Length: 319
Length: 262
Ligand SMILES: Cc1cc2nc3c(=O)[nH]c(=O)nc-3n(C[C@H](O)[C@H](O)[C@H](O)COP(=O)(O)OP(=O)(O)OC[C@H]3O[C@@H](n4cnc5c(N)ncnc54)[C@H](O)[C@@H]3O)c2cc1C
Ligand SMILES: Nc1ncnc2c1ncn2[C@@H]1O[C@H](COP(=O)(O)O)[C@@H](O)[C@H]1O
Image (cartoon, rainbow over all chains, first blue to last red; front, side):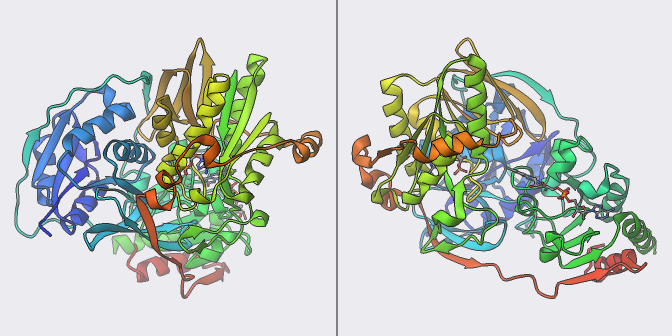
């Protein structure tokens, strides 16, 4: 089979390319000829360069302002940039699942979301996925000719090309469609320091057991270079903002390391973190369900265990 | 205010969920209405209560056991229940399921217009979150997804949705399809009277023929994806649980250092 064009929708914040996009470009290289699709203001040279270094031969830019927030406008932009591509890869977020569905409705493509990998078998895309709170592995074959796959962050290692390569920036002609939905108001969320929760290699989460004080959880996250997560109970209490919630209805995370502190491990929470590489839990209750899925469980008070662990890790880092 | 809520029959989250021949195993004793659809039913009931008039329809598409999902909606206070079941629906993907739901919704809407269709944000068995979009497209109605709050006034629905980078307020003219998150409300508990009434309440049963839908256009043959393999993830090996006897923090730190995670 000749190399098919594989489009990767670029996630970007403040002009910077997000990590999962580079992961998806790396995966795209194993499927065909990668092109990147950039929706928004014109990408800066360094963004184009980083996409090129990860395999994008072209960066197709669709210029869009605030209306890019409307799912139908955004999906029309993606469609305009992918008329010649058989495969479209996205990062699995709630917004992108909606885009995937809209694009599939327009093209007849088959869709898999929350995938952890994709390959070509007998001319069709096959994907890997874990479902049911990461208790089952499922292989799905996209029987339709066109495929759209939304991939979870941290499931492919981003690797730059050996040889330096440059991507060509091309502007795609696009006129935003009228939509029955309209955007009334946008209230930006203050972005925290560091990588977003969904993309972090390390996540340290605190639950009800923190009693509302996230100092130790934050300190541990800091020394491990990770992001801070929380349970629904903690965000409901207003101890920490909603963006930090890990779980089936919050953010799904698949970091190399997940540390759960004062978290019981309810099925809703587990559904969003059970596929993590290594899982460590600290909980007073030896019967907490989170211990059933932890590689290391410490039965103890987080107020004793965490300060000691933080001190030891700081020493290690300083050494 | 006339609102239809789509509710899905899903395996109980606490039960051992599994696959049989590429499909999610569903049986009556360990399944019920998708938990997130309780928020959809609640949103509909609250809007009708606020309007002081109106009706709530609960609709499910699924095998014989799926009737449990609409019975649950009746227990919560829905006024009418519809169960679409047909052997030819087996193996349908999200687009096929949407087509069947849309045909049933059109049938209700043609009799007397609906103002809204409300769905859950995701089915906790598959979590695709794509059905609301496919359904709105099939109906040709506006879609407002992932609403953490919803209001209706002057023929317009307005929602707020929490995206990672911003809280967005969006609106669309009625009739519209709205999907609600678990933040939208706190579902009520069914009271005894409603539970008893729901047991005897009639459930409208429709087949594909009743809806004028061709089975070949929605079932397994039409599906764009197919599960080719499913296997249970083996339990994590070498798990250890250590009780803190004064050095728990050191044990934790050393474990991370040994694994190269710190
Ligand atoms: C539809 C629906 C969707 C949901 N979605 C999500 C979701 O996406 N994410 C999510 O997280 N939840 C979700 N939930 C809520 C979920 O069911 C649980 O209620 C929640 O995860 C529990 O949070 P928790 O572990 O912090 O609290 P608890 O269950 O109260 O557990 C607190 C734990 O802390 C331990 N503890 C107390 N003090 C200490 C101490 N000093 N040191 C160490 N340990 C201590 C206790 O032993 C206990 O195990 C959802 C619920 C519903 C109904
Ligand atoms: N078979 C079905 N019958 C009725 N409603 C459904 C069905 N499948 C999905 N839904 C609705 O669509 C929502 C999102 O489901 P999904 O896109 O499958 O994650 C659910 O919360 C339900 O409201």
